[in-house]
Length: 278
Ligand code: URA
Image 1 (cartoon, rainbow, N blue to C red):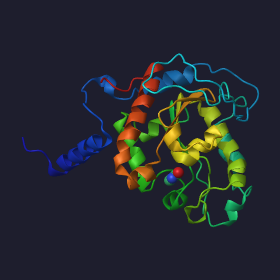
Image 2 (cartoon, rainbow, N blue to C red; image 1 turned 30 degrees about the horizontal axis):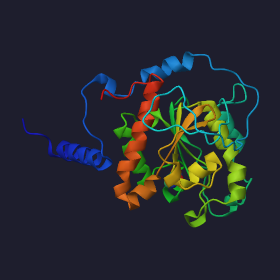
Image 3 (spheres, rainbow, N blue to C red; image 1 turned 90 degrees about the vertical axis):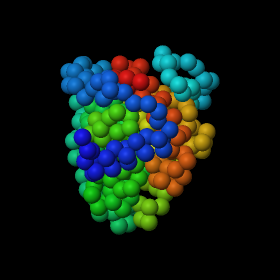
Image 4 (spheres, rainbow, N blue to C red; image 1 turned 180 degrees about the vertical axis):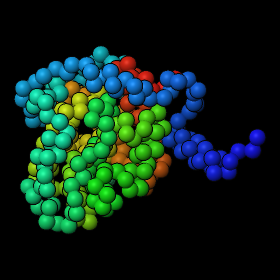
């Protein structure tokens, strides 16, 4: 039977993308698909209540092994301990608290709206980027420009959908000319991200690019030194990888990113999350 040319082109693009990522093989096993039904069960499960939000503090300690068996080595750069959140806080509470924020100078430097975050409030996997760009500022949604489209492809290559994960940025307002966020802006904005993390309680957090990785881990180490390692972080495992915008400029690095994502998939599987039959 002849294949619909549009479908054929889509399939070709998909396979080409997998090849670019260095992804090998595929599976007809149902377990290859992300088990979205698991979320409903997860929502019913009681979550430990903790009393106080912890600010990240850097503690350099020797590498140690953890209870998970993943491809990436686990290094403890610092560990902020168990996920913490004020009882019964929700993402809506945090969004309400932010309001039409004027806490830092970015509100007067041309941003049109706050870009809070998008995705499942009970996501096992969270992606954290730097700050909104032009498209994100226009739409009010993180990672919807070219870099965002690549991120969506990466998520789909992992056997998930965008709506299964949560996507946010360290900074909620677009810096002028996409300049790097400044220290005072980070200091003002990052507590909201910490609260988002504590509400969502993801199993794995992927820090996208140097800026997000350095901010979250409170380190000045370059992404090349942080990649390939897993950091305990607010009750989750944090995996640094390249920013999708960097991958657009350096496509040869997509393979490294895919290696990182394979580590992420292994971590998720170690929590019993069904992703891949391979
Ligand atoms: N880059 C980021 O870091 N975040 C976005 O939301 C878009 C591009």
